[in-house]
Length: 493
Image 1 (cartoon, one colour):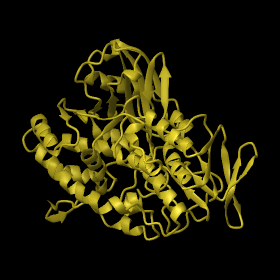
Image 2 (cartoon, one colour):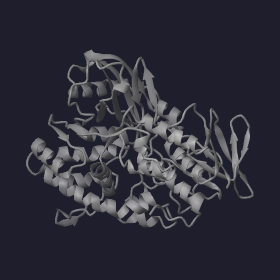
Image 3 (tube, one colour):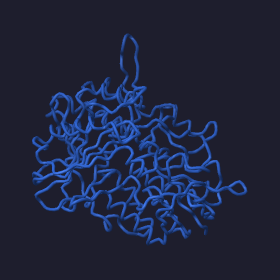
Image 4 (cartoon, one colour):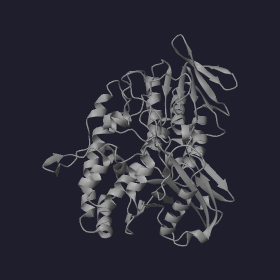
């Protein structure tokens, strides 16, 4: 068994490290920061606790598989998982609202009919049936298998079975998510519901392929879950699993270069000049690390120009009312203006963004039962720590729609800008990678986990199968499979 260096202690990197450790390899993780978890961060202050990354979990089976495969132990033995029910409350720009149950198609159909009018639920339910077909067609090649050299078969054919749409004597089928909303849902509020799933990942629904329909489907089919104590507890559990598998961690160690010898990866060089030898290297970093080869012609290229997130942490006086929704999405009053600001030629922070408000019912996050810890997030352009004051105030105004009188209850607030995301993840400008999607000429595929340099693999959100907590865990499984089983590895069965 060999010595493996893993660069970075993000969730995907740790998932790979734990699997490689139990396979008998000697694994050492070098992390430039002083803690593990990457984007899954934590802020604690005056008895309040806040997640600074993901606020809930989808596809928990990915992490359940990790714990079973690396120790025959259930994930629930290490963390307390609870279903988020209702899944979300949606406040639309016209003042209407809908409270959607978790993982219940019939319940969602009924809730939408009651909130938006007869027929709205049926249209959304029919959309979910088509989204399931897209999921079934793409699940294995996109998430459970390595990205093979013939990846272009995923780039051309649209897996979403769009409904024929007659327009000006022509019959067309939706090729983008926005067209799915306009032609199949036929309600601005349902369209906002659909597009909010793409926007949460920093995707422009006007250009995202129709296959992005799998994003709301994943949440609907597999539910949304919360980890008691916050999602940081999941990062802690994975870190402790790595330690149990004798994975070593070196914090405050900035890797600046992958060392090549005799045409293959042979180790890494640290910022202080230290050279570390290795038989294999796994890079869990954003694009730009020296020594990681550029993609050649015909290969999937790294994605650029993606946005970031702005997060506002709120310490609030007053008890959390019984029955409060864990998650509320406050939709922008002018969706087109928001998209134009975010994805125009010169992106700017939206003056009135779509805001996600998280209000977890978790005593571990507050000093006592007479306080709340709230988190607001919005998608914003990448780069910088300044220029967000107006957007922060707009986010607070949006939250006031969901929580009347909120402003008077705020004890203090802390703002996390794209610069803070960049500091935590190493991604230029704090850019956040979306999950891989089929079609769209391959624009939303990610580079393969194996690279042009033998002995070097990549893991995490910037490589196959892309961003998101579940996808990071899948990435770790794929890299471990390629190393342990070799290039003939065909993914999980």
